[in-house]
Image (cartoon, rainbow over all chains, first blue to last red; front, side, top):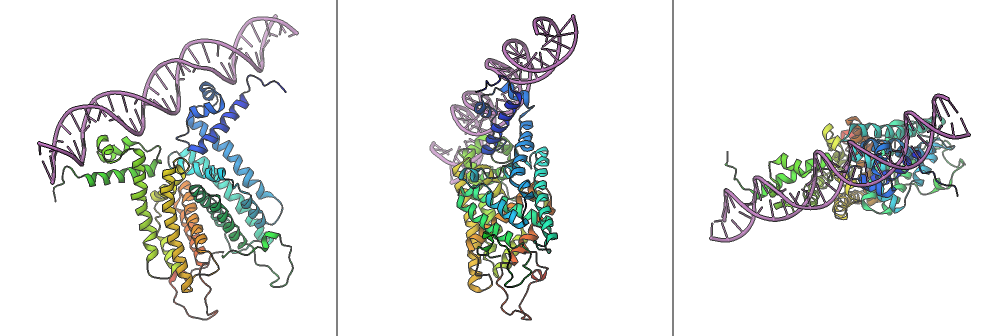
Length: 223
Length: 223
DNA sequence: TTCAACATACATACTTGTCGGTATATTAGA
DNA sequence: TCTAATATACCGACAAGTATGTATGTTGAA
């Protein structure tokens, strides 16, 4: 086992960021305590203020680094997968975390946005960047589907993307408040049902065989 | 002009509640300052703590009285109007406040829920009561529509109600973060489009004349 | 006259952030 | 390569301010 260096500034910074992220996700930014973060990391106050100018700066770093990475990993990169756009979206939605702990803490992007956007313009701008990247990623995929003919051409990709984001966030909120994974599962099912309604109508009206993945065969939701 | 009594406990309590509500909506519960509320009302700390045992108790009263009344006025009572259920829902959604200030401060129910539900079970329960009443009101209306034949029978009223709530809250969040009334308007349009898709298919397939309100004639959204 | 309704001053706990100082790593020069 | 000089990383007590809540006094209304 290799000896851990006594000083490892990158590691220290990263540990602070992660602990701060967890604390902020738990309690919100304003009521996140510096001392709590320090206690969780065994880092001292001096070290923290060496790496970050202020609590605010720490918060910005959480948005720019930790949360941005979450969006990238959970949405932006999967959006680039191979396959039909709608299938990709359905897959992403299905794969969103569903464990009780995750449901309770919901989407950290939404949480921070709710809390900080009206209070602090710097936070708001940073969070908006993430929201826009998220929506733009979805919209781009939808446009691709439209030019491929697998996504209905009568819908506006930007608005539809925004709609999907709103649905996901809305359900995350409800599930968080209900503290009930069931609420989230029902929401997911309904979102998936809606996503299916975005497919371009099958060209061969009846009898035409198409390659269908299993989940496409499930009963259609009511819209 | 009638002389204002020097002591009017009910009025004092109500003024405190309203000012506290505004401050909580602005800054969130945790960072709402008692002193700010006092300054806004010209009430002293002794008076406040005469009417409310603690800041928490004040918060509970905000939920139980102020926010509950908002839900009632904006949703529960309108849900009981005369007319076709889907039209009623569309009307409610269209009438939701759209002014920049309102958009920025979004739905206070959602805000408080986001902030306090994971931290304080008492808050969570109270807020959940409101969410459930909200959803139940919508679901009841949908069921009525189903038995009247104006709402599609292949949808689950409870899930659909929950879906609508999630959409509204999700869009409110996005609009709040974007600080852009346009975002909210686009969201409203899309929600209304979705609501229209809940109508039972017209029985007379073509040419059958039905009474239609103007907004029903607008172009259908893409789903 | 009695009690609820309010006023004021204060107590206490906790917050973020600072500051002098120390230990370790890095680099420049001989 | 060894060493001196400097930069970086870190420590932890304390300052300064703010938070909620309390103790006690005063006043108006029934």
